[in-house]
Amino acid sequence: MTDIAPVRRALISVSDKTGLEALGKRLATAGVELISTGGTAKALRAAGLAVKDVAELTQYPEMMDGRVKTLHPVVHGGLLAVRANPDHVAAMAAHGIAAIDLLVVNLYPFEATVARGADYDECVENIDIGGPAMIRAAAKNHADVAVVVDAEDYDAVLAEIEAGGTSLATRKRLAATAYARTAAYDAAVSGWMAAAIGQETPRRRAFAGTLAQGLRYGENPHQRAAFYAETRSPLAASRAATTKSGDVGPSCRRAESTTRVPSLTVSPVSVSPALPVPITVAVQATVPSAAASRVTVKRVPVPTGTCAAT
Image (cartoon, rainbow, N blue to C red; front, side, top):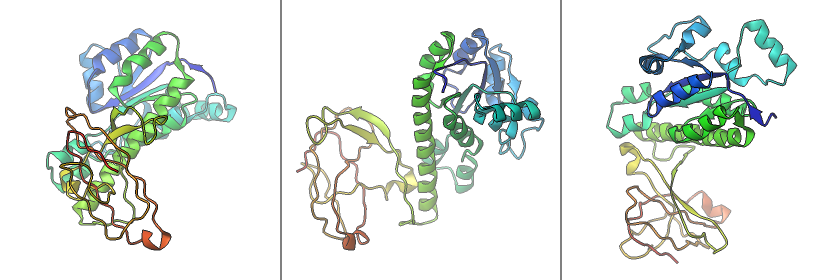
């Protein structure tokens, strides 16, 4: 793997356009060719920047209400080609595929669409397909490609590009963040769909969270710990749960279980009163194999304040 990877071409496709104009201008000043789609390309042009449409690369127009635009070998080949692999380089030359060194994508606002109470069909239309596919491709090829899914990473990445290229350490960190984002997105979609069709106990249940705050220490003073807040849709809110048994401090609700869980331990926790997000408490439980299939998992939000559990 090359430690420093210069950025010559960037593909940008974002729903949340926070910081987009500044990003585009700094990339252009650094000599980076900009490729984009739909509304993102329109916004960049409105800022006076030269942008090439993805359709110019693929020679296919966006179609089917935007469902198909980036799912093409010219795009994915540019993201996935290993620059140090002669066979990959030969394939790129043979098929007219140019390398894409930076991918900036944030996804269709599925979670926000569900949260405002949109109907089933509108929620389905806000499930992003091309975005996660590109993110996963770029993240897999982090040896050569930097992938950015959060606007808060723009400045750090731009600083490296302006200094000559992205570092391998940064590309690895960005790739990990990218996979976490697509995992959280899929968890939101699968959780919403299960709730929407009335599946209370689907075969697989995925959970994801965003870092809310760090804690002073974990279960023991030498361990690190943190709170992660789960974003829950209105449909799934009533089914959201955290595995607990017994009372958890003053004013905390008592959770229920369909079986008695032995060897249950909960670490003392402290919740910031000013934290405006739902919080869940993770617990450790040892469940005999014979009883494991009878355990019902529930999750209850911890109110603001301080809750101690023993």
